Length: 126
Image 1 (spheres, rainbow, N blue to C red):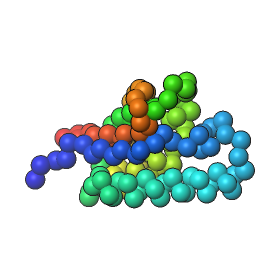
Image 2 (tube, rainbow, N blue to C red; image 1 turned 180 degrees about the vertical axis):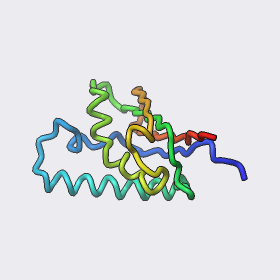
Image 3 (cartoon, rainbow, N blue to C red; image 1 turned 135 degrees about the vertical axis):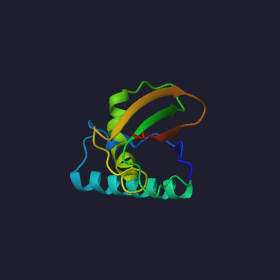
């Protein structure tokens, strides 16, 4: 049996700015947005065939944010706003998203259409 090389999931938007660390939102509203984003990501993972069985123990996650406009964005806020999406990977693709199991790299570019692409590559230790 060959080991999977990677799983790629694309979301047709950037993360919701109200889920970011600087958002001023009531915690109940923020929690509803968080749960909705997480559920949407699980659906995307399943629809795009990214779910793994068995789950990957260790992995590297490459996130590519593509903005559809010329606004300036802080990369740390984009990552923070993506927390619900990252948490959705747990139990669908990876065992845990702790720092000792998941490494991360991020890229930000501009194009005509917004998107966020997650490329998850397992790290096998044998």
